[in-house]
Length: 326
Image (cartoon, rainbow, N blue to C red):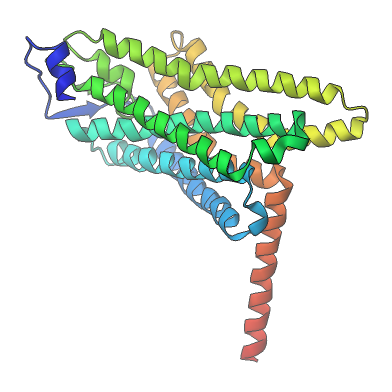
């Protein structure tokens, strides 16, 4: 990072504030109820995703390439909400709006890392469904455990490097005016726009990463489902088509929950009042991790069967314990 600073700002002294002030949810009536709602969503997310991860670890039938991606999504959801929600509640509910410079950059890094992985993980799941439906006979070769581990690991490396670059470029910015961040966390855009020196590289990188992390994956997913639709059209029996389509229903719902709020935010950001935009973006980050596990439990037969087996074991264990104590 020091090399970046020396190269890009060799003739300038970098002014780094002791702290920033996060002023996202200001002037909103009854906002404490919203913080309570976020807390409930956070608890739901941790419990639900924890159950999904435990099921995948304990049930041998779920140790398949598809469920490596599902486990990764659950892990990312827990990590993302744990990085965001407790700090939001501490910042606004308990009025600790000041955050040190280094903590702010760390806060941003982990939030955008998990948001990146959520998007990329949806691509992995769509690829899994594409191969399963269009190349069913080659599925086990193309989507092997080794290939899935390699794919997920490579996406983690990409996400880490991309977000390290974004945070690294922030360290060359000088803050000689306001230190007030008009967002609900240390958001990259509001943060680099506060700088009083050239923030053009940050602007370019932010747009590049947004394209690569959000719009390219969305385009890939749309193309994937066009290919899946073409493959389903070739299946003669309507019953078989519906059965194949049902294997995609959970993923389609995940994509809708993740992308629709983002598309709304980007499409109407200029027309939205500031507080409406901030609440919309906070829900975009917090809602999907709470809803994703419910979708997989309700829509995926393997998860439901695994959950039933766990409840059956618990019930049998309770019965045995009661019988022993009699």
